[in-house]
Length: 541
Ligand code: G1P
Ligand code: ZN
Image (tube, rainbow, N blue to C red; front, side, top):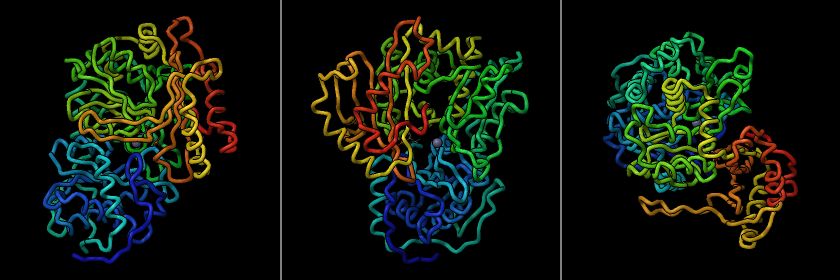
């Protein structure tokens, strides 16, 4: 065991989902070690406890796993459970923490951010419920990084990560497990695998684009293996350290190969993709894209068709910028619907307290109380179960849903990599204009409410402020503005746009056309052009 002297490195405060930086930043001397030591210092229960460890397999994953194993040994951790090859998808890590009643877990991922030597890396701590650590823990970790003077590490040799079994690192027990097995068991508890097998056997076809990221092994084992889908159903199924040079983000802007396949004349019946660490999902029908907000609403409305949710839902939750489509379902089902700030960590308390069963975000994240992370493969299996149970197509399910509940037309416009100061100035000016907005008419619509969203957690009473500017119109239209908390360079301004359309005859409209007037209002109100110099967003989803 060695004690190594170090100094604080500025800027190690975790963002929306852990600490994310360029790989080159993590490769700086002591950078990773400082943060990991801060975790051990902030969570004393890890001493003598069990830690789950794994990541999405991106560049630096294996290096980081070896360092963390040696530091865990030196910090008195009793046992580490690692996915073979250092691999665990984020939802699988959450399920493993829960199944083995671990003290917590360290997940190595920068989610949907590009990987490789010039890409991004990330690390986050999850608590014993399997979910992202609450703000008071991430803040304590950060505080430790600001005053760290030494870290502990063993000088044991590297462990071979590619063989399952029981091993030891400097006297600490290490269990290397199949990263898919426990997760696959959980999925079989929730979904009707016989019905889905029959759906494939009847000749229905699917394309799952794993985007050369960590979902590959899960999708291959479960969809092609247990569910009997033909080989080749999963494409880009081998995780690569740089995701093949692509941006592993499952949305129409980045999953272009899948969009093309689903638009082709011989398109499969069902398309799906997931991100770097397999917690996000996008689902599509033949020539039909499903927005994540609609997906959440459809899962909620049809949950009782799925064995794991047959008893019904305790409640649902969505992040504030997510459309109100699920609210309409909750109202009809007579269950509670919670509106939380952006980021999965805010769902944890509601799930732990049994207040909600399903939750989701507009950013291609959907999940339930089976784990404490969003779960891409789970969402895809949920949809497969619905397709099998109803015999309907994706398009039929969505259009029937709109006919019943109305359509919440929705889009997100991202202005990426803008100057950080310009972004802050824009938000400051916007916030300053809020008090006068209510009652004003913008683009012919009257503003009903304009505020900076704050949240009171109904379980632990914690209060979170500054969670995004909302401008809500009397007709139900919404414009939301926030700055991304997951980027690693410059700032990203996200503008969320939503309009409710109850008229079935109007449900076939093209989304951007339907939102055109709101888009103009949104850009003018925030003076996006004068603050950022940008006329158009870089990504529209
Ligand atoms: C983004 C998404 C947010 C999601 C997070 C982690 O965060 O908008 O919904 O929880 O990634 O996947 P942001 O960059 O907006 O802070
Ligand atoms: Zn992710």
